[in-house]
Length: 391
Image (tube, rainbow, N blue to C red):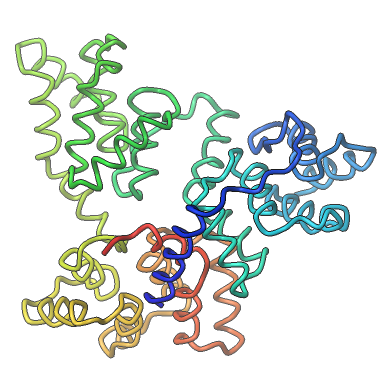
């Protein structure tokens, strides 16, 4: 598996050097509008996918949504329609259409190259679309739709999320805006260079932009709690910090004390339920123990696994061996918990209802757990995730 990922990455680099995205004629309104009201959403799909204005068939789509059809099902129906398939779109154009209509942006060249290679090696278009729907970017987009429909909903920081989603949550909870491209790149690079999440929090709160918002002490404390602890402060805590600030305690010291609090430490410890697949071996192995075996590794166990990885064991083999371990099997995990563990350990996220029900159905109809683990490790979502790792 690891060699396949390396081949894919190598091919992506070559392809990026030799060719760009093959463009095609697009109307001015070429992006889908995932958060728009039903009728406007359907109009955007006609324009971004079928490259034309809607006809009387639009009413059928709008009624279908009112009767409970999901927007994901509508996307799928448009892309699998005879009209779209009749366009004869090549792989790269199909991928571009997917990103423009579903995610609402043009894909990056490496993204187009990755999926184009995946398709030429036997992957299906349906698998690519499923992976886009499962991506953290799309899930964040869907969450944003709820905030657009209900602006009274607060935005909280996501301490345990993957890097991009974590940074996105700080822009929204601290700066009250969408992240800009350059800013996102800056913070992502800082994390990759070894900056801690505590340092990222401090960078946001000490930024010129945040200072320009001129928050009073009450507003500052509320922002700290919402971004760092993920909830509003209790009245007693809010009053305590306001009094402390008014008496001369610095804002930086308030932040540091929150980082040192038992609540924050427990929150950070809870993040280990998600395995950080791109982490160094010394972090990856303990995360597997905590996620799957619910305990810390012993010194000899830690040495064994780290040495095995350094001698050439792939992370895919490590995942498989943990799920096949007698200690894990003896926990008597039922199918629902097993599938949840797969998502937490391999995908680094909670399962969505559709995925959970699908895999439980596969197991209930006789598919072995070994085969399900293998399917997760071969899935386009996992391949896309590990393509960004440099371990």
